[in-house]
Image (cartoon, rainbow, N blue to C red):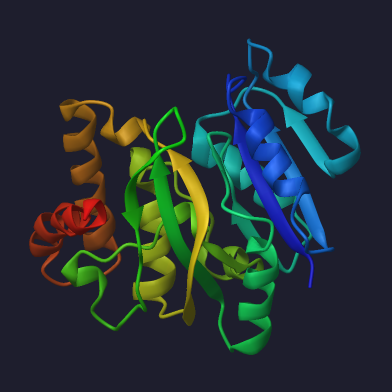
Length: 245
């Protein structure tokens, strides 16, 4: 089983080396690595070019944002399974992709997702996102898988659509709601820390961005038939409290 890993980069010279090295150190032998750069103006591309022999596809051009870049990568991917690893993130260990491949092989599923640790710039874990098995009404109760751990069969994008550019920073959430809740694609929770994610995401950078993200979450729920979406909006951030414990 070929697994395509797509990294989106824009001016990430401080973290891209760590990200790339975590991919090329995976002990799974059939990884297709794709990097989509948004036209970086720092030293990101110079760093990326040091690893050319490990990168199947490299594109560097302006785009319409992170989800447009992800869609570019997906359309270029040839793996049976596709996942994203952004430039500020890295795999928790060298066995992550092997575990993902085994999960797909051992279960009749279209989606695999796992757990995630948030770290600060010093590498210290400050929050642990341990997900759980999805249930029929999980999204109604504020459930959301960690998107950096989200892997799915490539044919799902053709069946149910790519990332939408209409949901701001909630484009990943909308796609997961669409696949898992609206279309009931089978999923498997891999109970393993898959990714270390450095804090500082766009949607959480200030209160205005947080409010915008909530409005996009609400839109995603309504358009994908999540009942009681206002309840879900309240519960979704509340669930994060337990990630600090």
